[in-house]
Image: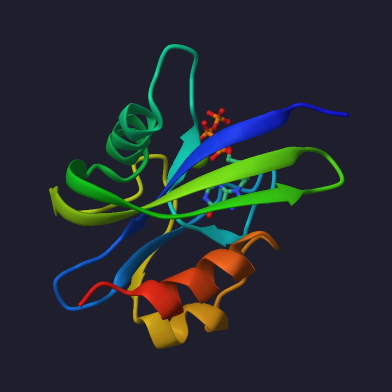
Length: 133
Ligand SMILES: Nc1nc2c([nH]c(=O)n2[C@H]2C[C@H](O)[C@@H](COP(=O)(O)OP(=O)(O)OP(=O)(O)O)O2)c(=O)[nH]1
Ligand SMILES: [Mg+2]
């Protein structure tokens, strides 16, 4: 069995109810698809630390408040991922793709118009079911 890659994933919620998505660079696994920003948890880091680091590095926002949303384990042909997914309900900074990625703020009802990796279908269902008011 291949090892499971632990990934910290942020569902960044703006005050108007829109959610931040970014397009994965073409050369990466699932390149060209939209994602919720995040990345691999490194050795010695908590998932919360990893998420704060990745959101700062990828989309230039500083996390102020987090709460758990869901955990999805998904087997791709290439690897198995554990998407440890958190609501980011408070943050500072203007989001933009610091690695040249396209970003968008989308309404919950529009999420299904974008092409995400297969594992994200379950995350989107959790967002629709658990959206904080
Ligand atoms: N960030 C993120 N990754 C996702 C999502 N859905 C999904 O299947 N993944 C997968 C794709 C990748 O195999 C893995 C995340 O790895 P990554 O490439 O973002 O990791 P990273 O930012 O640490 O990148 P790297 O520098 O190590 O290449 O999880 C998602 O919504 N967001
Ligand atoms: Mg990443």
